[in-house]
Length: 307
Ligand SMILES: Nc1nc2c(ncn2[C@@H]2O[C@H](COP(=O)(O)OP(=O)(O)OP(=O)(O)O)[C@@H](O)[C@H]2O)c(=O)[nH]1
Image 1 (cartoon, rainbow, N blue to C red):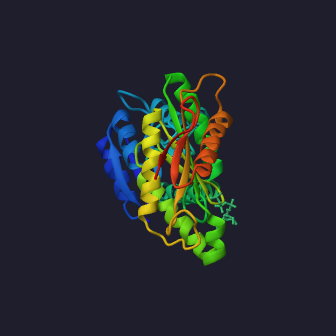
Image 2: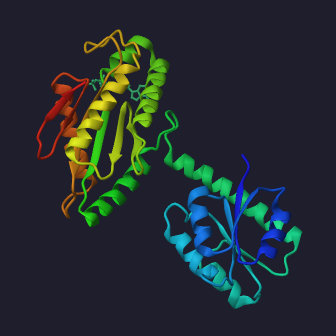
Image 3: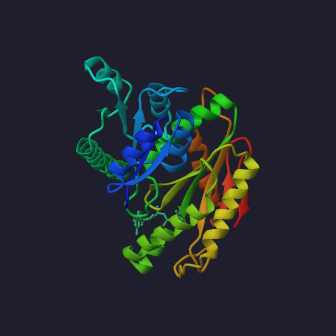
């Protein structure tokens, strides 16, 4: 896949020159000031940013600081383009979080070589990141990534006094499914359920992950009990509507799921463990009361919607 490079520079001549130098290597985007550059970076997620140090409204260091503070951007490598050489200037660029710097006057082969190196490194890091955070079978985020995000979301909801929803989702009688259809078909079934959950979970900030085995977990930011219960009911219906045959199931002739839910405005006492425990208790209740349904725990003890 073609890489994307963003040039942020308030001199159109430099942008033109760099674009010509780099157009064989990548798709080139540009911005003529820091604010516009940050907006494009957030929208387009470039693989590399070339950032001018001296710009009028917001200089390169200030832009770089914002890039490093933004969780969505901080992994994007920044190369400073600077007119001032010398050790102090180089150290200032690297201290600001840049991976490299290029000094003016610009030399085509030097720019191309440095950019090539950092695009390669960025691709290698991105694939490592993917391996560390994705589940190989379903392509969903894995438990490790979920745990990181959940800790961040709890802290954010605590600050804002907002309710965070959690759904633990478990395929019903999945052992019987494996026994009847074989492990490979079992894997296919997990992929189909993962895809269905992804389709149902599209609001900004919502996150679906494989929790382990035949269990999935969903984070639902800013969601009250009623919304979380509605979501749980919806995913149960959605998976049932896939009509994946499950001849061995005592619940239905097709694959069904159960969901344990909770919605909590976290106070200082509430951490990932207490929210997951509440969702797990609700999941137990969903299983106990017949499966193919969503139950919510916490203060609204064991309110269930049958799928
Ligand atoms: N095919 C496949 N099976 C898996 C995978 N991970 C876990 N399993 C199986 O999932 C099954 C889970 O079984 P149980 O925990 O007994 O639960 P269940 O049969 O779904 O029953 P209930 O949850 O009570 O409805 C076990 O047979 C595991 O071997 C996987 O990656 N692929």
